[in-house]
Length: 141
Image (cartoon, rainbow, N blue to C red; front, side):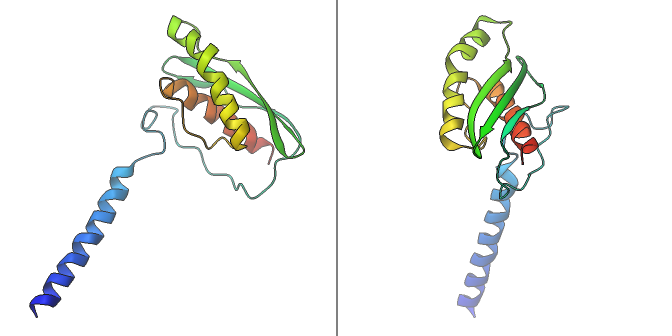
Protein backbone atom coordinates (compact mmCIF):
# COMPACT_ATOMS: atom_id res chain seq x y z
CA UNK A 1 0.00 0.00 0.00
CA UNK A 2 2.85 2.35 0.84
CA UNK A 3 4.42 1.91 -2.62
CA UNK A 4 1.12 2.74 -4.31
CA UNK A 5 0.82 5.99 -2.32
CA UNK A 6 4.42 6.98 -3.08
CA UNK A 7 3.91 6.19 -6.79
CA UNK A 8 0.67 8.17 -6.91
CA UNK A 9 2.28 11.06 -5.06
CA UNK A 10 5.17 11.10 -7.54
CA UNK A 11 2.79 11.09 -10.51
CA UNK A 12 0.80 13.99 -9.05
CA UNK A 13 3.99 15.95 -8.31
CA UNK A 14 5.21 15.33 -11.86
CA UNK A 15 1.92 16.50 -13.37
CA UNK A 16 1.98 19.65 -11.26
CA UNK A 17 5.58 20.36 -12.33
CA UNK A 18 4.59 20.08 -16.01
CA UNK A 19 1.59 22.36 -15.51
CA UNK A 20 3.70 24.86 -13.58
CA UNK A 21 6.30 24.84 -16.36
CA UNK A 22 3.65 25.71 -18.94
CA UNK A 23 2.36 28.52 -16.76
CA UNK A 24 5.88 29.88 -16.31
CA UNK A 25 6.78 29.65 -20.00
CA UNK A 26 4.77 32.78 -20.84
CA UNK A 27 4.40 34.43 -24.23
CA UNK A 28 6.93 34.05 -27.06
CA UNK A 29 8.22 37.62 -26.59
CA UNK A 30 7.94 38.60 -22.91
CA UNK A 31 9.26 42.11 -23.61
CA UNK A 32 6.06 42.91 -25.52
CA UNK A 33 3.53 40.95 -23.48
CA UNK A 34 0.74 42.92 -21.91
CA UNK A 35 1.63 46.18 -23.63
CA UNK A 36 -1.09 47.97 -25.56
CA UNK A 37 -0.91 47.07 -29.24
CA UNK A 38 1.55 44.24 -28.55
CA UNK A 39 -0.46 41.06 -28.77
CA UNK A 40 0.96 37.77 -29.96
CA UNK A 41 0.36 37.38 -33.70
CA UNK A 42 -2.21 34.85 -34.83
CA UNK A 43 -0.54 31.84 -36.38
CA UNK A 44 -0.96 31.55 -40.13
CA UNK A 45 -0.57 28.05 -41.56
CA UNK A 46 2.99 27.78 -42.83
CA UNK A 47 2.27 24.69 -44.91
CA UNK A 48 1.18 26.96 -47.75
CA UNK A 49 4.10 28.07 -49.93
CA UNK A 50 4.99 31.71 -50.35
CA UNK A 51 3.73 33.40 -53.51
CA UNK A 52 6.21 35.45 -55.52
CA UNK A 53 6.02 39.19 -54.99
CA UNK A 54 6.71 41.90 -52.45
CA UNK A 55 4.73 42.82 -49.37
CA UNK A 56 5.11 45.51 -46.76
CA UNK A 57 4.52 44.70 -43.12
CA UNK A 58 2.79 47.07 -40.73
CA UNK A 59 4.61 49.80 -38.88
CA UNK A 60 5.34 48.29 -35.45
CA UNK A 61 5.78 50.72 -32.57
CA UNK A 62 8.52 49.68 -30.13
CA UNK A 63 9.84 51.34 -27.00
CA UNK A 64 12.65 52.88 -29.07
CA UNK A 65 10.67 53.85 -32.16
CA UNK A 66 8.85 52.40 -35.15
CA UNK A 67 9.98 49.47 -37.29
CA UNK A 68 8.63 48.48 -40.71
CA UNK A 69 9.95 46.08 -43.35
CA UNK A 70 9.24 44.99 -46.92
CA UNK A 71 9.95 41.44 -48.06
CA UNK A 72 10.50 40.14 -51.57
CA UNK A 73 9.85 36.51 -52.49
CA UNK A 74 11.03 34.87 -55.72
CA UNK A 75 10.59 31.21 -56.57
CA UNK A 76 8.91 30.70 -53.19
CA UNK A 77 12.05 31.86 -51.32
CA UNK A 78 12.69 35.01 -49.32
CA UNK A 79 15.28 36.84 -51.41
CA UNK A 80 15.29 40.32 -49.89
CA UNK A 81 14.18 42.16 -46.78
CA UNK A 82 14.31 45.93 -46.73
CA UNK A 83 14.00 47.88 -43.50
CA UNK A 84 11.77 50.82 -44.43
CA UNK A 85 11.62 52.37 -40.97
CA UNK A 86 13.97 51.83 -38.02
CA UNK A 87 14.40 53.69 -34.73
CA UNK A 88 16.94 56.49 -35.14
CA UNK A 89 16.40 59.02 -32.36
CA UNK A 90 19.26 57.76 -30.20
CA UNK A 91 22.87 56.97 -30.99
CA UNK A 92 22.36 53.40 -29.76
CA UNK A 93 19.37 52.97 -32.09
CA UNK A 94 21.41 54.16 -35.06
CA UNK A 95 24.18 51.72 -34.09
CA UNK A 96 21.66 48.85 -33.89
CA UNK A 97 20.23 49.80 -37.30
CA UNK A 98 23.71 49.84 -38.85
CA UNK A 99 25.16 46.76 -37.15
CA UNK A 100 22.58 44.35 -35.75
CA UNK A 101 19.68 44.70 -38.19
CA UNK A 102 21.84 43.54 -41.15
CA UNK A 103 22.84 40.47 -39.12
CA UNK A 104 19.17 39.79 -38.33
CA UNK A 105 18.37 40.12 -42.05
CA UNK A 106 21.04 37.53 -42.88
CA UNK A 107 19.71 35.21 -40.16
CA UNK A 108 16.20 35.38 -41.65
CA UNK A 109 17.44 34.89 -45.23
CA UNK A 110 19.40 31.83 -44.12
CA UNK A 111 16.49 30.33 -42.18
CA UNK A 112 13.84 31.35 -44.74
CA UNK A 113 11.46 32.20 -41.91
CA UNK A 114 10.67 35.01 -39.50
CA UNK A 115 10.79 32.45 -36.70
CA UNK A 116 14.34 33.25 -35.57
CA UNK A 117 15.67 34.53 -32.26
CA UNK A 118 15.72 38.25 -31.60
CA UNK A 119 19.17 39.85 -31.56
CA UNK A 120 20.74 40.20 -28.13
CA UNK A 121 21.17 43.89 -27.40
CA UNK A 122 18.38 44.83 -29.81
CA UNK A 123 15.42 42.97 -28.38
CA UNK A 124 12.75 45.60 -29.05
CA UNK A 125 13.97 46.60 -32.51
CA UNK A 126 14.49 43.03 -33.70
CA UNK A 127 11.16 41.96 -32.19
CA UNK A 128 9.39 44.71 -34.14
CA UNK A 129 11.35 43.79 -37.28
CA UNK A 130 10.30 40.14 -37.02
CA UNK A 131 6.64 41.00 -36.33
CA UNK A 132 6.48 43.33 -39.33
CA UNK A 133 8.24 40.70 -41.45
CA UNK A 134 5.88 37.90 -40.36
CA UNK A 135 2.88 40.03 -41.28
CA UNK A 136 4.39 40.75 -44.70
CA UNK A 137 5.05 37.03 -45.24
CA UNK A 138 1.47 36.23 -44.21
CA UNK A 139 0.27 38.51 -47.03
CA UNK A 140 2.21 36.34 -49.50
CA UNK A 141 0.68 33.02 -48.39
